[in-house]
Amino acid sequence: MKPMDIREKQPMMTEEKLLDSANASSGEAPVIELESLTKRYGAFTAVDNLSLRIRKGEVFGLLGPNGAGKTTTILMMLGLTERTAGSARICGFDPARSALQVKRRVGYMPDDIGFYEDRTGLDNLVYTARLNGAAPAEAQKRAKELLEKVGLAGSARAKVSTYSRGMRQRLGLADVLVKQPEVIILDEPTLGIDPEGVRELLRLISDLSRNEGITVLLSSHQLQQVQQICDRVGLFVQGKLIACGDIATLSVELNQERRVEVELAVRPWSEGLSARLKALPGVLEVQSGEWKKEEAIPGSSRVTVACDRDLTAAIASEVIHSGAELYDMRRREFGLDEIYHRYFEKKEE
Image (cartoon, rainbow, N blue to C red; front, top):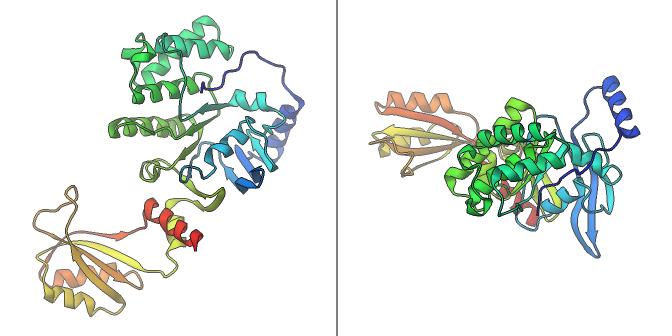
């Protein structure tokens, strides 16, 4: 599938003038605003009553398993498929009524990007820029700058048929950016890329938001990758948004039992120290285990102390007074992977 092209410029619509006036008088509206958005195929509901608001410059991760309805949601946002019910406004426009206005402002990178394989990466970008109204010289300039930005300057004149999957994804990001969008929507952008390629692509996406104020909606089922760059995430299961917020908020919301876990790196570890920690009021359990290879602190034991409240200071004091050495100490937060699976379990129940 080829990222969207705008083949000709159209005069400004009345809706755009009304939007500018409204923003001037009432402050900046959300860049993406979905209200009770629903899509049904006969008796099957692909997207069920989805409400969501995304701010300018935010990186938002729409996370869920394959078949959850993420791509269907994106297609409705772009005006590429009709909604059954609800409303959507992208950059202030209804994609069902003003699809061209939305396409001018939004860059979309699908999970399977189509390019002209027998042309170079530079040729493909120049072509997209020209389709979006750039003059020849400006199209060349913009394409070369973007190839530099995404790390493909050295392969600019190589045919796309020779590009690896990671190189194609970076070219796809450049192809999206060549139209200078306000919003970019990325559908499974890291699929099939090696770990180094993933890190590089995520860094590029993060830089776009932080340095250029571009709003990013990233659809993925790769939880740990998305956690690195998203300001907020929405957990999407069977067409429904079951939770939404930043990682810290979701972690607190999930931890209804208010259990606090403190991780320690201690040397030496002994049964006596274990007994002393277990005797502290509020300590629920004490466990020791092995470090992961990349986390290992030489000679120390990995200890987890579960409490009914934050006892970090008391635990540290007890370790030090026992004569043991304390190398590291941190409160453990729920990671995105655990948050997702716990919410998924609750949804299934």
